[in-house]
Amino acid sequence: MAEIGVVKEGYPFIGIFLVIAAVIAFVFHPYWAIIPLALALFMAFFFRNPNREINMDKSVIVSPADGRVMSITEVDDEFVGEPAQKVTIFLSVLDVHVNRSPIHGEIKFQEYFVGRFKAAYKTIATFENERHAIGIENDEMKVVVIQIAGLIARRIVSWVTLGNSLEKGQLYGLIKFGSCTELIVPKRVDILVKAGQHIKGGETIIGRIVS
Image 1 (cartoon, one colour):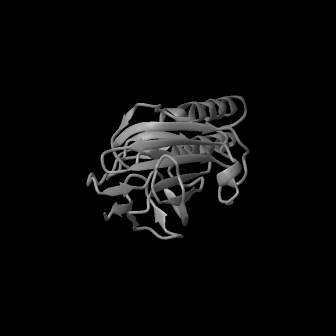
Image 2 (spheres, helix red, strand yellow; image 1 turned 180 degrees about the vertical axis):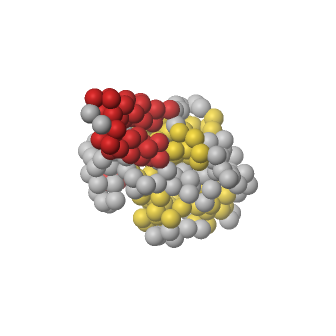
Image 3 (tube, helix red, strand yellow; image 1 turned 90 degrees about the horizontal axis):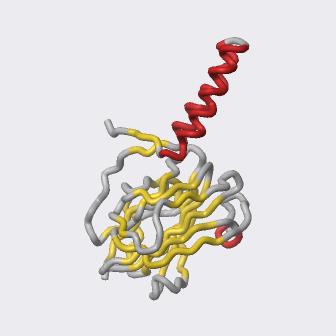
């Protein structure tokens, strides 16, 4: 069975609800501590970080996030620098929320956009919501991964910066409480997922280089 940890950003939330539960149990009755205890368990569930088996084949791109594929569209992207396509992934509050690097490479581009907080499943969220983008480059290709905040998600967390090197499947950040992640890859990548499909970060193969 795969080990499941909790990222450090979850500890304060878990701790607060455990303290509240202890105070309520002491002052009132243990029965009333059930609700904060349940919330502490939910926080541990939300901030979970399960181990994933990463396909290290250099020709494949893995998913940067857990969630459901919303759309696959053709786009123009200055960093990718060639005909490109975008895979949009919606994360519900039940999905794992850590983000993983889809390829190995160096972060050559990083940009943070201050925006609004519309529901992440709405198309307009891609253009108006707060988001954080990184461009990763290696010898085979350039890709862009974008973390997009949602209606409930009000905090994008990134543990990397410009110039950092990433291994494929390496954790690089998370979005707290419901969100959307976009992956932009060259059009010469054969996309192997479909709209509506539920995928796993670091484990599901998004696409493969065909030329």
